[in-house]
Image 1 (cartoon, rainbow, N blue to C red):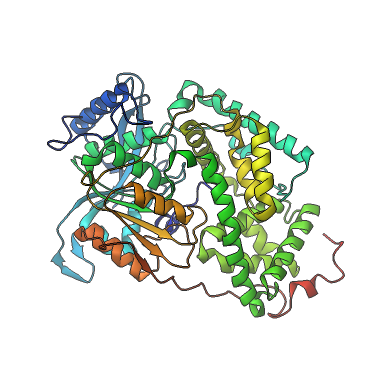
Image 2: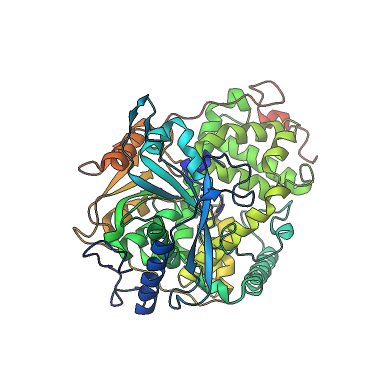
Length: 555
């Protein structure tokens, strides 16, 4: 999944022991299950859980390194977990945790006291995204009722931020700009990207050493159980979005008796044969459909943006901009790669459609400023972006076998790019280090639970989500007995909990506040489409094709 730092709807609003088990609790992930971890890791998790319950978390003021300019209501602490759960007495790492306590005040009547329901832990996805800012979402209208009942808990997973951070390359070299983005790359370009992928994989090993192999989804699930114990809870309330839904499902399969309530938002496909090579191909195919949605919306607002009144004409406008940027980068930093990444974010989130269309229109009409401001890499975020990319790569490469023969990658992506050129090759280059990965690969856990293993689980999905294609949510629903799927029809924003859809939020709140789920799979009408913004530049209604007449050979 490319653009690993992108969050779900909730994150986008912000900028992410046996003795400790409930009585009679057992883990479904016994050594005999396909893909299950060994007994050493199970014992190590029990040891770590017992220690965490005894130590707790000493919350205090957040440091600037954890959350810059944090308000006083947000407090921070750490929880220690083993780097290697098979050796719980070996090296320990500290995960940073943030919290805002439940207000226990009804947002509509401050005189009414709301019963506290404990902590709600959130992960925004990635792999590689931090949830440290998440607790601040409680001040937004759609989260106030939940913030009244729950302590909102965010954390930085292992490898992220200050939680034993990973790095694979000097951050100054991570986001090279301007960059190319050919939809149908030449053999010479492919050789160049292969060399870059090999160098990146070597860099991960050189900069991380023996730690590298321990950054996995299974360990993220174990860390979550240690965090539960450190918070003093026998059972966990967890909301996992995007990738967070995957290791949330792993958690449910490994520690079913430790689950209180579980929301899997923008659920990814947990089937072992989709982790992660096939999953990325599925994404690339789905992004083509989502890019069609973006072009259709822009075309319907040709009177505002002047980019063409059909999706095909919008595509030609986009191609014209890409070709011009290949000849001369806007602002010296925005080339075809930066343009593509800017519109990839639009394929993730409807709310980004107006700004992207406006920037493209302004650029084609002679003003590159909006596109430069939108798409140029920001030096002040380079360290965070490099760290997020390193964690993304390490987790996905470690989690499962990947093809190690370039011919397989070339065959599959060449075929797919013929019908889905928008994102196919960019997604392939993002993941290609996994072909040359220096650490051992795991065998994915076969996520399944039987009737009665879990309390009801709520799964949320948008029907046209490209980053987490909808069939994955259906598969998640099938594998977790007693789960219920709520679908936002004809919509594609990545992550729908706490967004603008009242129907979705009604199910989300009913579940977290009262434990109620629909009796069966249900659906909600789509959210409203965004309204267009008027771009800078020539008057609305003038098409980009007209603006470009006589300028085809000019940068």
